[in-house]
Image (cartoon, rainbow, N blue to C red; front, side, top):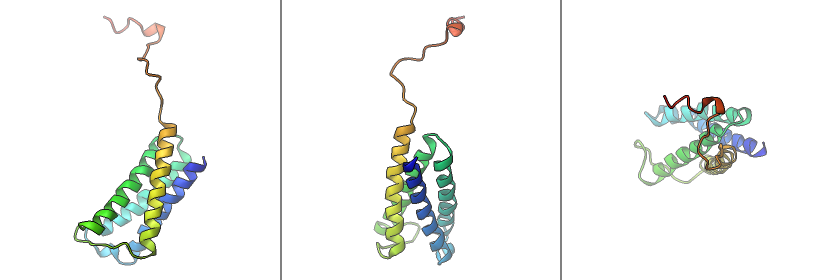
Length: 135
């Protein structure tokens, strides 16, 4: 359970930073503004799912959230993203980036741990079902 809490906290930190940045002026950016707001809402939902839903899905969502958010920032700092060219400067950048790396790691651990495992055997129908599909 502790890895789910760590992942939820990391996703929530990134979401909070993006909400703060949205209020600080990014809401005026054409595509980036709505994306930051969506990031904040989506991050809150994923954080709740991580601690309440015992499935591999929240882990997948947390890892995907981290990859997409960090990936978008890396694009913004290298080639630019929707006209925005960012830099690796300021507490918000480093806080969000660290949180996203943690979200990726925690999400991947939850995903791997909770992914249904098959033994490599083919599905064997129940005795009552054997032959029902042979007609």
